[in-house]
Length: 75
Image 1: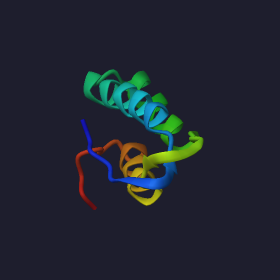
Image 2: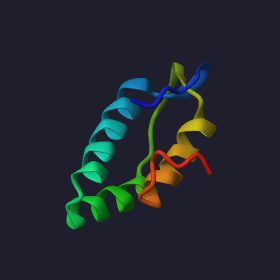
Image 3: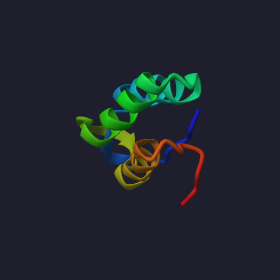
Image 4: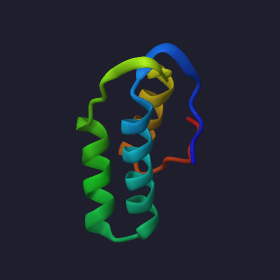
């Protein structure tokens, strides 16, 4: 699973972990419908901000990669 930096105020870690796991599973499934839904969800998802949460910029960047269907792409 992807590792994000933890910071004082960031995205809720549980919410992010749950979403990222489901999205990665959908992208890996190679089922066009699941992939398309995960990509659309990555563009629309929002997370609560919590103490000791994940770095928001890192998570947002990862969501953009999921939206493109390339979560492992570093660009």
